Image (cartoon, rainbow, N blue to C red; front, side, top):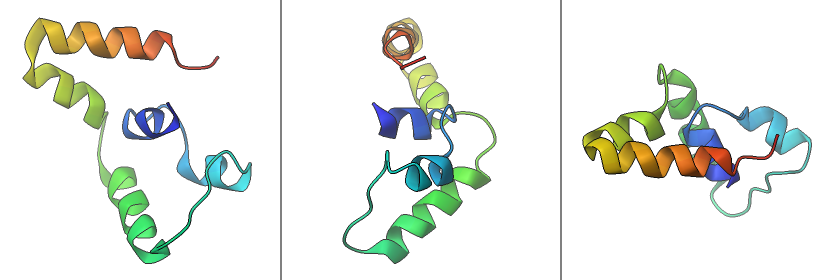
Length: 70
C-alpha cells in the first residue's frame, strides 16, 4: 500500500525512508531518480491513471484510498 500512497502523493518518500517504513535495496541511484521524478509531478499519478479508465478507474482508486492507513 505504501507504493500506491507514494504514487498518489499521500505519503512522503523521505519520511517513509527515515521512519524505516520503506527499505531500499539494490540500485539506490535508480530509487533516488524515481523519488525525484515523483516529487517533480504536480498532483497524483494514481489519479491521472484512474482518470484514463473513467468511472471504473475512479471507483477502484477510491476503494484503494479507503484502505490507506489513517
